[in-house]
Image 1 (cartoon, rainbow, N blue to C red):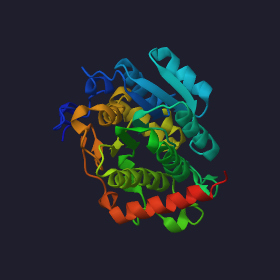
Image 2 (tube, rainbow, N blue to C red; image 1 turned 135 degrees about the vertical axis):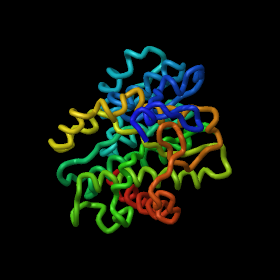
Image 3 (cartoon, rainbow, N blue to C red; image 1 turned 45 degrees about the vertical axis):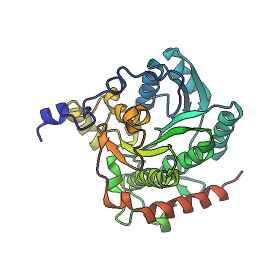
Image 4 (cartoon, helix red, strand yellow; image 1 turned 90 degrees about the horizontal axis):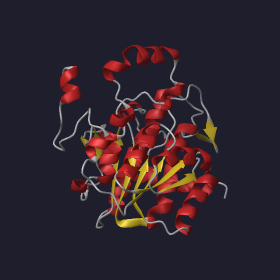
Length: 307
């Protein structure tokens, strides 16, 4: 496919690679709806919040501190609620959950957008590799803690990535969740993104028989501060050729906003999306047994964390 065709083609949804978050919500009123978005202070999360507010939604935006969240959301006007949610800190995640519950906030959608990527050396939290803990365990705690706050038609959107294909061949290294036996920056990032995808699949299975949905998305390759840990060679490539293949932030935010809000997806659950269309994941991204095992293991991880 030529670059021109990639940039201009559209899929069955009517949207494609170049569609923006504003494009996929054009003409849509989100008045009366409430969405929680993690990572609201920069990049895709910031743009997703802006467009959701633009369309009339109330937005709960989380960042590592309430101050960062407030600074990010205030310029948007509308109704916004800034909250702290440091995904690598269980106490912070639990406090965020309790605040949403205490304030009686019902959620039409949770967009799990925040994350860290390609850490150059092994870092850990509570004995677990930090990308797995932050991107997967932190979001697992947040979403499962807030399931009772979802409306009857609530949607959960997990930001996975095409990088899930970089995960180890066995999928999730259950014998090495600490990363101590072997570690690779992209391999472990890929594992965390496969975990995000599998979590969405298992959550969708648990939602069966309801009108709630869970899906995973690949936002595209975007130059944001998420990539600040990339090695020097990769950064040179991104800077030299980024204009040819990188999505803009408005384009990158499109798929998560589309999946969270588009009326046509009311009955679509357990899917993987890219460019605002259903896409194909790695084969084990559809492995129901692997998804259930990951859920069970993560539940035990969370139960054993300090209170």
